Image 1 (tube, one colour):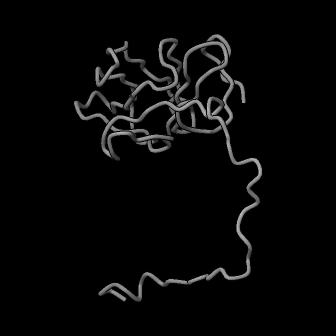
Image 2: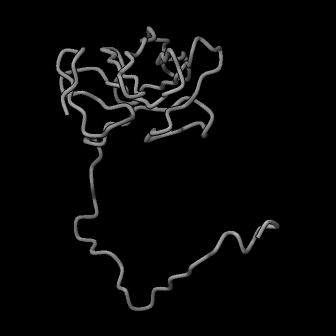
Length: 140
């Protein structure tokens, strides 16, 4: 889907961070109860702080925006309604420092596949186990 607002933004997925073909990255997150969402690029590890981007509010609870400076490997987080707390992307492809730390942009086109000959596992010998979670809780 093409998105207005940046040079030319093309998204394959509805949410998350996506590296763009020309340069930069586009961000989209669903936050229907928020008035303001900003993507922040903190100074961590070998990354200098980049300018934050205020995301545009869409009509259906989504916020989206473009950063020309973000790219594959850039760490980022969301600031909601001017809070000091930063949140990871719920649609992140990578959380290198754990689930509560900044997310990392991943460009899936850069991955070099090495398993073209793998055909999966045979059905014979596999075990399927059905677990009813309620059975293993006090509430039943």
